Image (cartoon, rainbow, N blue to C red; front, side, top):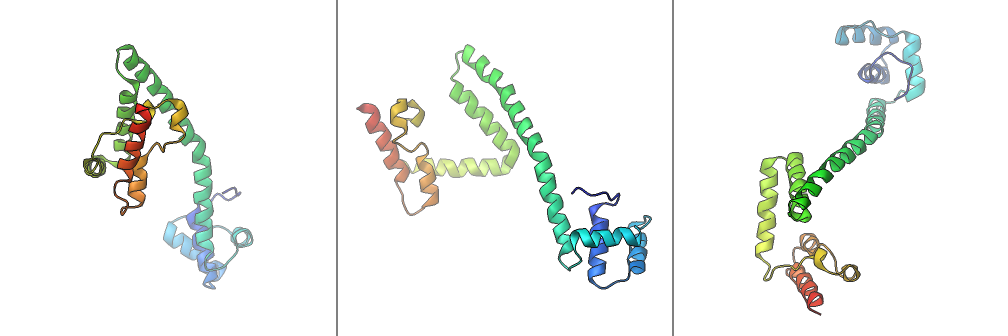
Length: 188
């Protein structure tokens, strides 16, 4: 939040909440001194807060909401930078693997899975893998691989047939049918 106040959001929220309960300015100042152990803001400063943020019972939530939105906006460029930096750093790993004769798709897949495990934690990652393997066990044939199709054919076949299986549990075999479609097109 852009404001000229030296006081943190929790002090402002406290003052507004107390004012919405019809507390006098002096009582609010005494409460801030007692609760937070700091020199309280002046009456004038608290009145400005009331003008800026309003004085209703829901106003502390408004301040918190605004602060969270501001933090998200401020952190978005950093998150994008961090992600780009990570991806750029991994390009050399994939290129090195390719030079050693490894398949880039496998190395890239391992990188993605490692990042995913770091995000969700090992226990949840193992649960995800277990459930994924259960879904794979239900298929009758191996998938040929969407990436292995010629580029012109990729547009007519969905790349992730298993997603439809997750979205509609009653449609068993939707992944199998798509796998069969890929195999048929590949053989033609």
